[in-house]
Length: 264
Image (cartoon, helix red, strand yellow):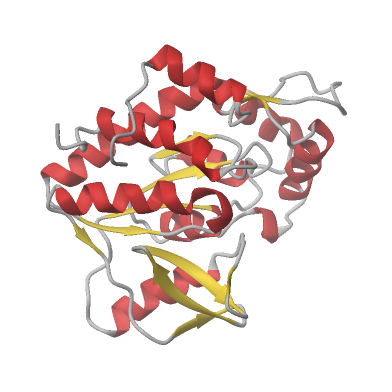
């Protein structure tokens, strides 16, 4: 993070709203509700690697959790137009994530970082990896030669990603994380002590019983349901692809400072 100033909580909330990382976000209400409905109807694409069974077959139950944990509107009659992420909930979750990162550093745990949103969150994860390594954590090096979903699974700046056609791929799939965890097991190596991820990378790791902290958008309800059931430890609600990834820098600075990982 270099000399990035550490914002106060109030300043960070103002920044999140101004940049639409939270507050009135770009994802429209009808898109959110469509994803909640598809999850409830059993479309596994929207389960993000979790096994939800028939526990969330009522779309209104999904909406209730998303209102509580993400801050979307709780009125089921609100079908179109603007939807929201509560920035207070974003920062609350960042502080819970920071506490788990602090524990990882104190315990010198091995940490695996991965993203299905390299266009938005790659540098958030990269900076987190660098801070954890500086604090004495082992950043898991994934096995070579892994493949999933017709692509290669590899690491870029300490963050696991899916690469296809010389491009870092936006993916919701749990298969790349499954390839990593299976590859570690096949090599006789231990599973990570903590996973920091998003999308299906996080869902798969949580379903495997690993400790997971994650980021998720308002139209990706599965991870919030996993948090409500205890499968994931922390899920931070945010727009996971705003137009300039540098907008996430103050958030990352706040997270690492709260975790005691700034070196100051």
